[in-house]
Length: 52
Image (cartoon, rainbow, N blue to C red):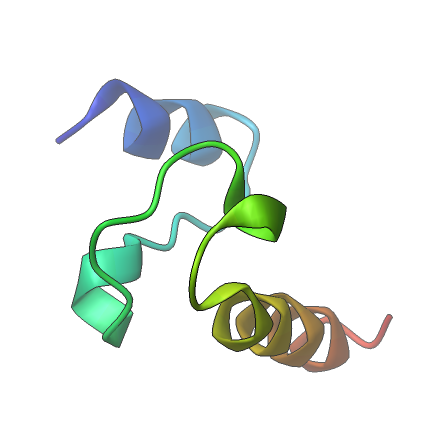
């Protein structure tokens, strides 16, 4: 398991590996990358799933 997944687990959060949800090749600057709208949709759907 990656350090990012372990960190999410520690904080009782969700870890989403972008390649596993069809969004490979993204780094830390998602808002500037090609495919940023798909990532934004993923974030928005996650927020909705949490009732936010």
